[in-house]
Image (cartoon, rainbow, N blue to C red; front, top):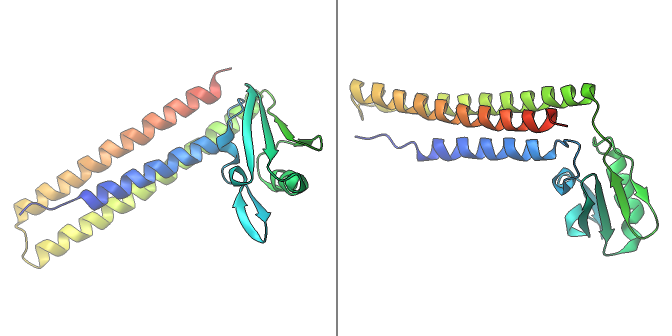
Amino acid sequence: MRVDFKDYSRRMDKALEHLEEEFAAVRAGRANAKVLDRITVSYYGSETPLNGVASISTPDARTLVIQPWDTKLLKDIQKAIQISDMGINPQNDGRVIRLVFPQLTEERRKDLAKQVKKYSEEAKVAMRNIRRDGMDYVKKLKKNGEITEDEQKKAEKDLQDLLDKNIKRVDNALAAKEKELMSL
């Protein structure tokens, strides 16, 4: 019998996707609309993502322009950005909000590098937990007599290989993000 690990593989892929979303939200001195993905605004009584109530453009490498479809939302959008952890003060001219991303200092780059390392460690822990779930499943199959000891060893090796492959993907994503953060 061959043990199927598609579910565990899919869960590890999801952990990597989540990591990439976390990385996208870390600003690297360049204007990137993804840093606004987590910001929501109260719109007709419900929390709505910022990109659902405004158009977001990047006129140059260090500026984001947010143009709400309803100008009454300007103050709410400005407030939402201020209370977020972005560390950028929005400039409101009555029609649009401008976010000017300052050049990152060396110290800030190092802080951001630590932050992305933490995110990657969290992803690795999540993947190790998924492997543990898989190992428990394999042991249960062996205990119930559904697989032999050789099949158990093979399944455990396959699970470890799956984890190793995904840890390498996390390390590659981390290296790319760190390179982006440390380049001027």
